[in-house]
Image 1: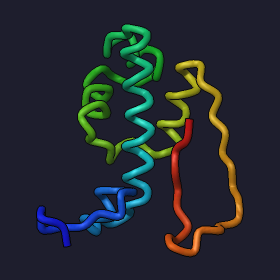
Image 2: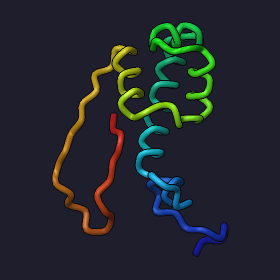
Image 3: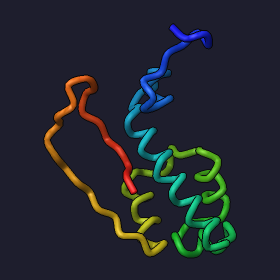
Image 4: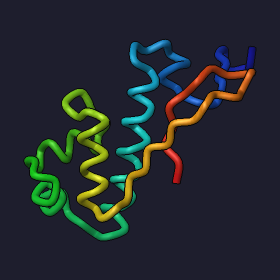
Length: 107
């Protein structure tokens, strides 16, 4: 046990906190981080992003604040495509004996 009183596998705070659907929450958070970085890189305002994504500005604000209940992984992937990103999904056999199979976002 660490001095902080908890241990982390380094993969996901959601898993560490035993949240339901931890992998899904973690993937959504990673996708939103990428969306946020792209919006900042392009200096897009929330109103402009909302128009691009076909949603309302308050929903963009919720998404960027981490309120992700109303956003499916598929919907977040479509936002990345709207931001001119290629999205590739790779499925491969699990080979890590230390950790179980996992979902992850790679660049």
